[in-house]
Length: 559
Image (tube, rainbow, N blue to C red; front, side, top):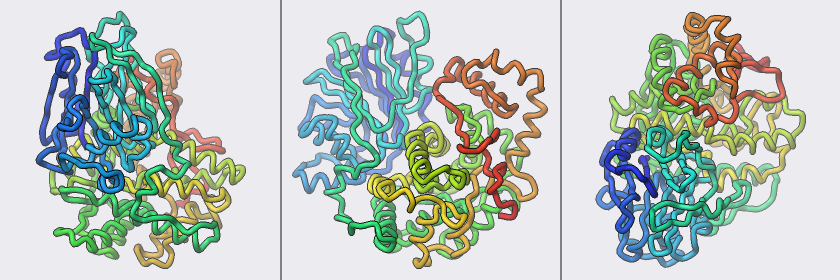
């Protein structure tokens, strides 16, 4: 996890502009570098480092003797950099995983380079010899990236939008700041003035297709066919492979553990592989909840089963309410379900940073979207529509759960790893017939649960535990977390204010007092930037006014 920031063609003094780069300092607490580009006095890079791999040579922008004309700033982890070195005959000058991007670009060009990367990443690559700038982002947007481009060709790029909103520029109105689309690269011509012109936006990978880098994967080819036993075996093999490759770290590894299916599978597999790798420390697992919450009880049971060093963080409704303002500033969104679910993750990340030495944090994000885990999938009109909606959710992850998971952890200098969003694992799961992926016998994620049925990785009642939304599962069974929030908001937003919400906020007008409350806080920090969120996250195929799982009829009140 790092923070990247770059300017091309700034008309303002760079020493003033670079103050904006300090707004993402939380992403890289270990070191900071600000560097001008030789020959382009109005172009520069800013980099905040969280040292995870190659602590000696990991500073950026990364430059190597073989390619003196290339400058690379990237945030992420490239899990297959050693395999690519071996198969393609590269000779690295550092132990930095991102160096492979320079070699791939030199050999194949930017589109093929990005397609061959197995990992999560956001990068800015400058080629001064060919006067080109490239920016790119991983398939699901696990790593964030924002872009500002003015009418006259001033380009600014940053891990978070807050590093761009106060930049000086020549436009009379505020230039658009957009999240860069996942799975894409953009190519720019670099002019002598340092300004740029966009040449093309390239989609380098369709996440439904087996990734090009699969041929270099140590797992090799999978057994073909869709008979159930073969499919279950492949799911287990691919998932374990996804966790194994993410062990790449020189810092301590920990795991978030809600006691739900996804985080429990991650934690159990992670601990098993850590033991096999003889890592010199126990796995720390972390659960958060209000007193007597279902998540705390379930997580404790899993931790006891797998033998992790378990930490429980109890929070009160007051602490949760007090955190909402800083959470919205951190997230850069006002989406209702995202804000709600982020409070617990923000508080648990704060605890991990202050009280432990775990820095690389595994989590279960992406499984609900991939394996149709949301309760509303029980209402899907057909298997095909369920499959289409699963793909839609994956395409939109960067606006919702991936955004939440990144910002809440990065705010406290932690690096998140999400094995359920592994390229090969997701591509394989999406290749399965739609009828295999839908809920079965009233149970969502039936196929995933069934695949691990005989493994004894986690307790059987956890393997078949019904879905809990993160914001619901960490609540007290007496009163949910969002009910406490509603009570607080009721005192902050009156009926007449809500009635005028469409006048005040014509785009994505809030329909509830909670939505209005979040939007007000968002506008305080990011006025006029509501279009960063294209739409609210809501369940489909039902007439829901609230995204909480507890409001759905399928929800089990005694879960």
